[in-house]
Length: 536
Ligand code: GLN
Image (cartoon, rainbow, N blue to C red):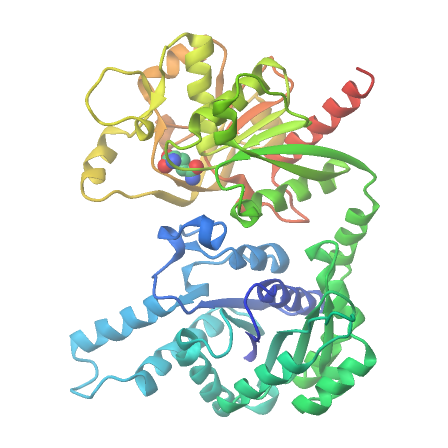
């Protein structure tokens, strides 16, 4: 097994995840099977309870594990489906160690960070690597070198470096190369962070310099000299127009050849699959604008996978996708509004705040025949909007949005009876890949082209079965279901240009070379709408 470990220096938010995912892609394009592991040194067991305001989106894996959005980059760039095993947190490691201690596995020893915690980290990495059938295991350590939380992981990696053969281990360190007021590329932060790494007993094999502009030869030479790496191992990672360009930048920098050399691997095949995607992306001439109506608009990363899925949809529909962000709370306080957009998307969400604004946006899309895509909460609110304004169920709502005072409102979105009991014990979400059945002769079937699909879920509430008949009689079609027909999964309006909403999150399964059907349908409809209206 070959290991490539990616660490970060200077500061967070450098795009270390994209760097690591791009390295993974380079190796895949040369014929290697890669297994990524993301280490998040926080104490949470997973990202399920974390606020997207602080962390960006919570990404959901097929086994239902809720993880950091970097795992999404890995799935999209590398093309493998991951599970909770591919995300190590301090919480998970400590839980293992403490469970063992309680069972008496440590035979009365004092349980310590070295060796017990570091052993557990190494064991986890090696187990996942060896069970994956991959050739190369890519380990990204979250955070920045020097963070207290990251220390046990860096120490574990240091030990692994000693235990593995030299040709089986490479360390890639990602740092920042800022420009000073005169526009000069500064290497001091890189020097300091490499020094910090060396104090921990680690020496980088490759240094990736994140910079606004391409690293100059002089800058590379300076980093090479001060940080003790060959000049070919200093890699420029300048700002790219699109993150999908990063693997191509690395190819230009010959990082692929350098790493293979270091790991004593041959090129197995050269695939141009990724280059093809980037070429398509570059050649798109038409554009559409999508309004994303949400609560977390301040943090763009809160909807990262949706943006990515729109981009994938655009590659296949033949247009570049621009976004405007609309804060749903703003829509609640104005009497009248218009959208300057070719499509309206209401993403997932939780809670009352901004929900009425989202309902207004959906009503606007429905009444003005503007392409609409609703996801999860967006699906539930679309059902509520339809129940209120078309079916005439005044005050129709979701149990999530009303106090449980027993008042007799139309809860068209509700917990199923058996969930109510679980909810009393603290609640659970319906998470991960679940089989969904699509009905024939529907938009859903036309888009997916098959009856059985597996999509990722993250929700608690459901369309209330009591209201399904009256809603369908009025024209909203539930075109897909799960759980033997008890849970509704897709809603669509046949008379509308494109009005489509899913209880699941199709964005998590969208890939650049395998786009999500609802997104292709939505972006295509937005493009048609734009063309139709150009003469209006
Ligand atoms: N809040 C809704 C539920 O729990 C929708 C969740 C979501 O959009 N991810 O069912």
